[in-house]
Image 1 (tube, rainbow, N blue to C red):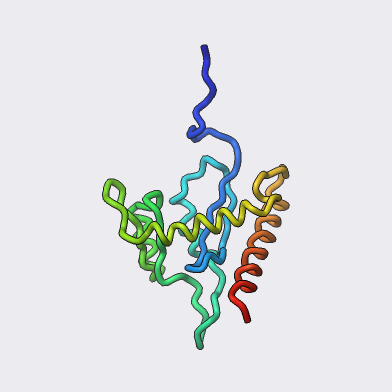
Image 2 (image 1 turned 180 degrees about the vertical axis):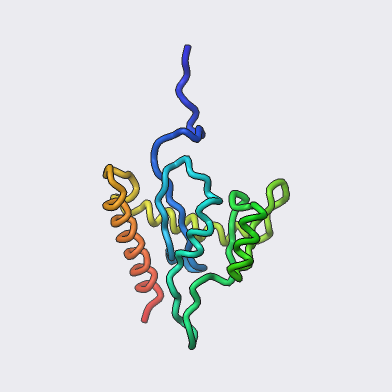
Length: 154
């Protein structure tokens, strides 16, 4: 008797979203990859892809001051590269208890993913090519930004 392949198998087909957002849940950069790509390899691409964020007087920042992450992003080369970019990594170590209070902040990212999947078109990929799918993801992120701006008021 042969069983079905494991759902956690790394050979699985499909796509995965990699997202970086600010403290309010505003998506700053989204990358869509194959499901079998390791998460830590795209961490620096997300940080480097953050657009300039205005707010304070002077030149806008291009990178976040701190980066919060799961144990998935725990690797010493990753931490060193973030420090070279003047980003403070706040990442839990594998085999150690989680950093206190990181769960509340992790909830913001998970909520952004939920809102992103609430927009029906990007939730299930029907396109064979990546360009239309990335366009729908960008449109969904624009809707999230619009809703956050409207909720914050004038």
